[in-house]
Amino acid sequence: MTTTATAATADTVDVAASARRRSVELEQQIQQNPGRFRVMTGDRPTGPLHLGHYFGTLHNRVRLQDLGMDVFVIIADYQVLTDRDVADRLIEHMEGMLLDYLAIGIDPARSTVFNHSAVPALNQLMLPFLSLVSVAELNRNPTVKDEIAHSRQSAVSGLMFTYPVHQAADILFCKGNLVPVGQDQLPHLEVTRTVARRFNERYGAVFPEPDALLSAAPLLLGTDGTKMSKSRGNSIALGATADETARLIKGAKTDAERYITYDPENRPGVSSLVLLAALCMDRDPHAVAEEIGGGGATALKRTVTEAVNSRMAPIRARRAEYARDMGYVRSVLRAGNERANEIAAATLDEVRGVMGGGI
Ligand code: TRP
Image (cartoon, rainbow, N blue to C red; front, side, top):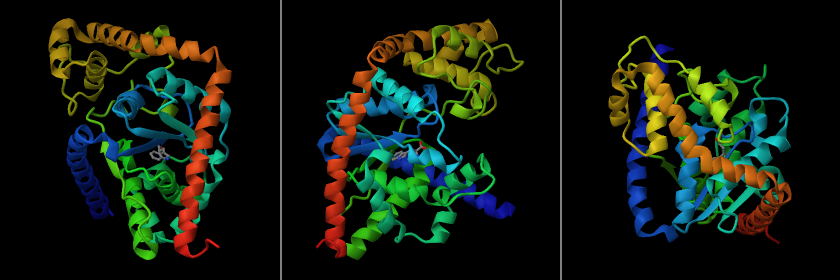
């Protein structure tokens, strides 16, 4: 048991290291020829997007959009049902997410925002795709295993095991070849690549084998020193007010050592706060820590609060402005769904054609 767990961890580290190397290569290709790429990524509408999302992937999407790439963003509503029985407050979460996207600079004229349940042809692709992976392969996915361990359901549903194949359909329906995601999504990208490769071998070349693009920003922890997560109450939402932000940071976990240093290995709580300030100020975390030095946790928290609130101020102002025009916000999703449906229908036709069902 222990040996298997250790082997799995070593594997995961290995996969992450090679994905990081690959991401560096991809960055060079992006600079040389952004037109080669179609960007596809997304989020589950389970709650407000937070600073971990922002520095991990949201910020990167806008950068890629601004480089002139065609960007697709899925609000993965069916994926909400992987670890809970019902998707509660779905509309509220979807609208919140649309506001977040618009506020950070996703431009509907250049990027397509859509959701699973509005694009039937995308979902239909999941059936032939499921035939291309074995149950044993689905069983091995470390992210799915982790989610099962933290699931709110007593029984594991079929959707939980198969959603990485659904995610392959999300990515492949529009022939996305560049997927900016966090490290936890790497196993799903492997499934997508496997599905694309096997489909192409069996039926003819239809799909690209997409690459993950990991962001250069290191992982941001929540205010309690564990993984920043919507459900753990340890995250600062993009749409939080300046006061809410101050309160969350005030309650953040630090340690007994007075002198502030950036040492993620030994001082995860303090270092994550330093990192958050540094990311907000576009500065090096070591330099930020040094400057605070003997000021201790109080000075650290003051710096972080100011840094977050001033970085987020224009985003929050835009968010509030869009929130006054929800008719427009909803029309962005409607238009995105229309475009996604056209593309999904064309891909499904192509798939039917090569599979012999296109009469
Ligand atoms: N699984 C992703 C998450 O939990 C969300 C997602 C759904 C996604 N479909 C996708 C990400 C396609 C990238 C590409 O965050």
